[in-house]
Image (cartoon, rainbow, N blue to C red):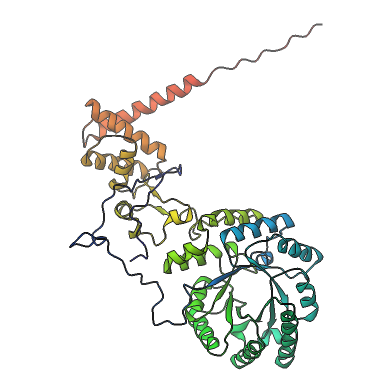
Length: 477
């Protein structure tokens, strides 16, 4: 079942070669969408929604820390000048993310200037910057005007040995010093371990308890190498939720394709904040993608997600970032991918005509998008063709439409038919029926009419081409 009913949603048309629009305003209801006794609408149960027993579940109570301008700068193709950073920050703010995280101002002089410029924009989103657990970085960060500072240090044996070379005693002492300094400036502070899932659990819980007692706003868990699975994420967040009273943020890399699933499990276990980036860009293959996370959480509680975010802006934001880093939005991208709301199989098309919820967990119109039914292929069904016949204003019986559909499939076995190809065939078929030159099952007569139509079109095109003469200038001797 779906968490929403969208049987009245329109299927609009766009020139996608083989796509057709379906007007759903007069579509019949499927069995089960109304009460059989009194005709009243039934409220469907949403199996994806949090259960009442999950008292720590934050699937319907979360905040997004959008890190395109921090983690995203670590993407191989990324170079954001100030103008681009400002444009992305404004777009994210208009979308409604609660936090925007920026590259450390200690990284470079331009990073510091960009951080200050974005802080002065007056955005509704809170502005954070991400720094090493080091007093020099903290002093620079608090002078930029940010609303909060995200402090991080590696705690796994790998990073303690091969990165910063410090033991847990030093890490704890420095963390306390940096946190107290940031707190003294009256701004938010988060403390996060790095490579949390390869760190010793006793070390993690010890330092998280310590920083919670001195008053951090959030503690962070980071799957820095993308090695965690949903069960591991759930267990660690649930354990941490039992020992700290502050909010819990989670940062998930996508090396094994688990980032969205891990984010969802983290919220189920009690996490409150999820780090994202647009299109998931970041170090290596990046982190939890903003659009994918929104799709996942929309499926669980669409009304909550719609109330928080301007979903119609998602495509604009993704196109903005894709252009900036010179990549294409993937065809299979949740929500905004080229094929996200495209239906092709005949059985699917028939069900979509009756009720789009049969094959859609997301409502495209909630994201300012449209669903499409592809009909110029060998898998097409006569119900989809019938909808196109009605759009074109043609009068054909069901048997005639089935006959025309068979011809579309026959031609599509040779090559996929464009929308113009399908429309021409349907108009020729209709004309032949009306004139008496054609009847159901007369394949040879239809072939003859189609050849005649193609010849007529070719002659018209040829007549439109005017001969061009070129005069040669004559020069005097």
